[in-house]
Image 1 (cartoon, one colour):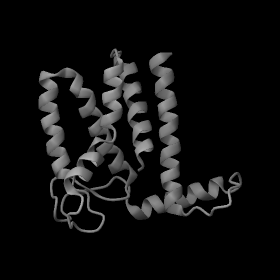
Image 2 (cartoon, rainbow, N blue to C red):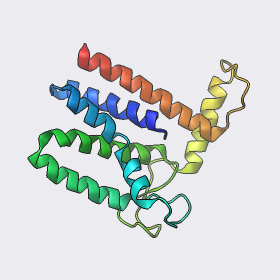
Image 3 (cartoon, helix red, strand yellow):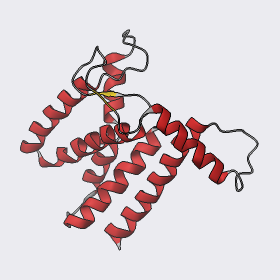
Image 4 (tube, helix red, strand yellow):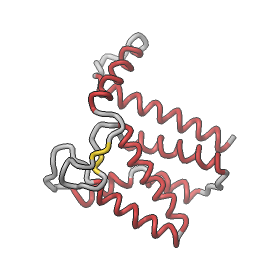
Length: 170
């Protein structure tokens, strides 16, 4: 999922949770939640670029360790908890998207792979979405099934974000 998709999903679900539990939100907390929505990818890019892992492999075990450290820091500095919450939601969104498997506790092997939706299932769902929107899509580019799945997730994230805004600020 692209960074904007992660941001919309995280802020949407965050605002919905804050509205349900009536948690006050200030600008710094909102900013840290937004940064946390892409923090695992930034963390992986900084520490793992140029490493020769298997094709499509996500080195999330180290990110999970890093989030564990953030949880400990959050205990002492509560506002950091929003960064941690955003990072945890990012990993859950990657598991939902199903493009690359998320390797929670095995950075080298395929053991421990976690996916909610397999690549084949996401392509099949994307095909159904593409057939659904074909009548209303007038663009010149021909989008494939896999791109339709990501497009569907991005649009759904936008709706969750709008719902979160109405629930929290309404």
